[in-house]
Length: 171
Image (cartoon, rainbow, N blue to C red; front, top):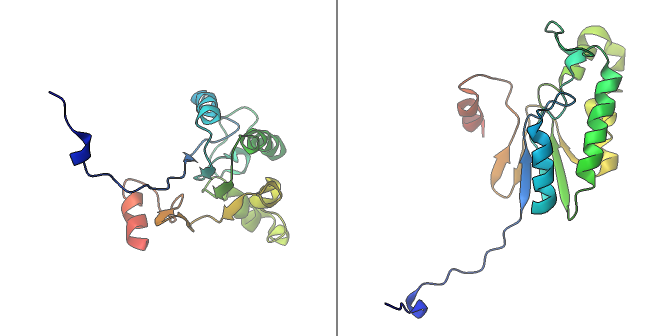
């Protein structure tokens, strides 16, 4: 039986913006599936990118025991993360980019506070990754950014199974 489409309610046109969210990659030790995501982004061609924190691992600055080879070379880590940001910066069609600092990037500030207080305010992850020069909007750790009416944060300073509830209550 043929159905008339005239009786359907037409929805008003909606402006949707395509954007991609990249959570917890932990470069330079990113999972191999990250490369699959990069290929998908080249096809999807988002208008915006949101890095949701922990794009960098900063294992060399961790207070935890070092278990990974090369985890004591912060410059090598930063160079690797910058190379990955170069790839993201070249994605076609990007109109905006937002980078939220995660607890792993924040390791630099904790390291400086504990070991090199004279460099506090001089050295930070935003500068090490040249985020402002690259055109990224930067959101510090435990703060949030908005896309439309939705709040995005890496976390609010708490982790574990109730972290999402804590973030909900804060926002």
